[in-house]
Length: 259
Ligand code: 13P
Image (cartoon, rainbow, N blue to C red; front, top):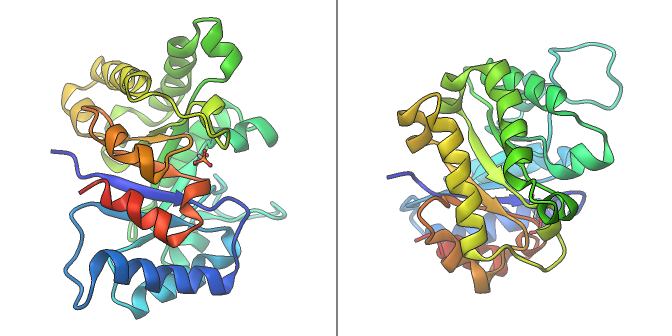
């Protein structure tokens, strides 16, 4: 059984106060008091300036909620203005990082090669680990042209080739069709399941056991109304939630759909 992961990607939204209050409110809603732990993993990915605040808030309320970054630089340190290293994330108690989100690919020109380099850097650090969530997905033009599987296969292959299949023991994947992100248009559970199954089949060409154990999250207009049906699909192991994760009640409802 794969343990589900429900992740919030706040993108460039939020504030210190929001991060702090969100953690304590979410913890109360999901974990109650005393903390009983969760049957699934919950992750918050605030903007870089609020990672430390979120981490401290998690520690303060003794919560099992995890904190992740939305991106990370592939180098250890150096003259990379504006960038954040893995060591800095570790320093702030950050346990996950998204890698290759479609907004990073589309707006900031991140190529499959760069995404692979970031993934390799993430799985290369331990003590504490920073687990990459490799994001992939096709645009509407690619879907209409019948290229969904070839695009996904290429995005996945570049990472497998660079990191090796074994690296996926320390990583998660998120399938986010670009046409469903922030559009209110969700992939149907059947559409999502079909791509998730394809991703697993691609992985199983290299390792059946890893293909079976890797978590594949769905992202793209996940909301309280559609979460349970999406999460009940055989190959969908949770969600990566954008807009609906900015409101604590709505995100808590999505988390509860994983129960
Ligand atoms: P929305 O849930 O707003 O569609 O965003 C999805 C996403 O990009 C999460 O990473």
